[in-house]
Image 1 (spheres, rainbow, N blue to C red):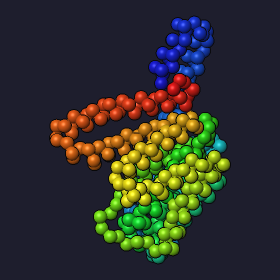
Image 2 (cartoon, helix red, strand yellow):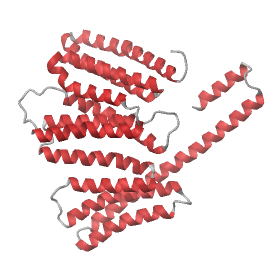
Image 3 (cartoon, rainbow, N blue to C red):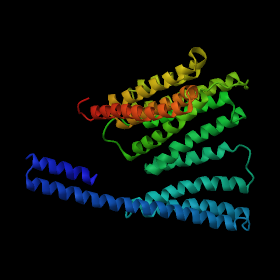
Image 4 (tube, rainbow, N blue to C red):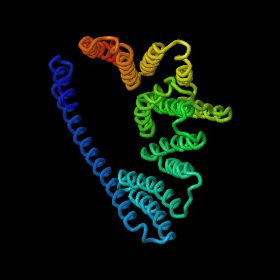
Length: 375
């Protein structure tokens, strides 16, 4: 980054667009901004490692002495850890906000550990997703009070984790293909709602956190969705009508409600994405295997177009990545086995060089278009 603005500053000075005094002020401002940025990252790294080591040390200490403690002492210790971390966060909120954020995050993590330690202590093993629900509820309450990005991340992850856990228990088989389709579609649509929650250039840390979580979630859940859309070569147990209705209503409805909260009235692209996802499961029996790759390519193109429309480069990058992955999977599954060994390697090299160059060129043009340049 330093080389970029230094080179641009020199070019503007040579062209006579700015005088020497202005160039000196810009250089001083950027250098001071870089120094403060390095300090902030150093502090955050120290806080991250400090929080991790404190949490790991606390868990090791508790596990080493756990069997020698009475049930009442075990429960009191679990509650005390949660209270201690949150009290430390409250005490440092004015003088050191970053430390306060880290301690409150440790308190939310300790809450989950405390819930399951209490369940183990009192042999509460009747319905294990209830522990995830309590943890998610605690994270949601912490987010409502603190509004910090770790609490946003915790609530955004734990609430879907609780729903998936409940669904897994309800279908009695986590690998049931019909049930896996429901969870894969729901996770993908919710990750897409997180990923597309930002519509303007100015947004807070909470929306930025959801943007990052959504990007990671879309990349991961797209693979799960592709696997779920595959045809199974054997007869599988079907879901009951009631489970199918409840499951698909949650998988479609919860991401749609989240999209409305994030995007208000401008939610029609999420509706299109929902239709695209549902059609994915019906396309292979109707139009064959090749249609699946065309459908994924169409979805990747639509995501990139969505990014151009709202001037969001991360959606363009994600769309380009999904398009490239679709081309590669199509080559390995359909084309490569029809060629000889040498021909397949040559074709693969041509695909990487030519296809990569074409996709990257198109991606750069779209990114330039979103930034106000020439398309």
